Length: 238
Image: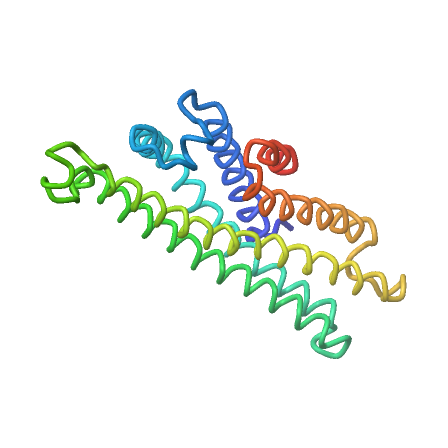
């Protein structure tokens, strides 16, 4: 019999990852991007960058919604599996409680992360479109020319917020890594005739755990070299 929670989680993960890959590809291939101009907070570059962000926002936000739904649906069968592997709370209680805890923590952190992303993007985009970001200094200093300080301040704030969300996303990969490692340990320590899950599935989970750790590493290392490690994240996601 098909478990609909598993099916919905798989569908949502596939859609979310596909949209996420599309967003990363659009980011990598944008013509105007120059890392040195970004670090220099060049106002003209920043205005182009915000226009690009507005263009990809529908894809990005849709991917976030499906990722949150995927973790919600995914946590249900994982908790059920932990309960089954523990034989109703009679076997390796700490290990199976940890599996359920990591599943719920991943689901909760994903929800918080997506709310932060949506809130920060909505506010930042509203500021970029509606607020005065060109003239902050008195005319006596700038002699009437645009100082563009507002664009720089907005970008710095946005980068800080994105960094916070990046680490929350990274925790999800660690949570998934721990869940799959603990499931492998639980199944591997059962007697063969008593296994509720075959070792084949446990080994597949171990392979996925290895890939999640690579994706976690790629996510973190993108802070150092975005264009170098972003393709690795794409390959692992595929």
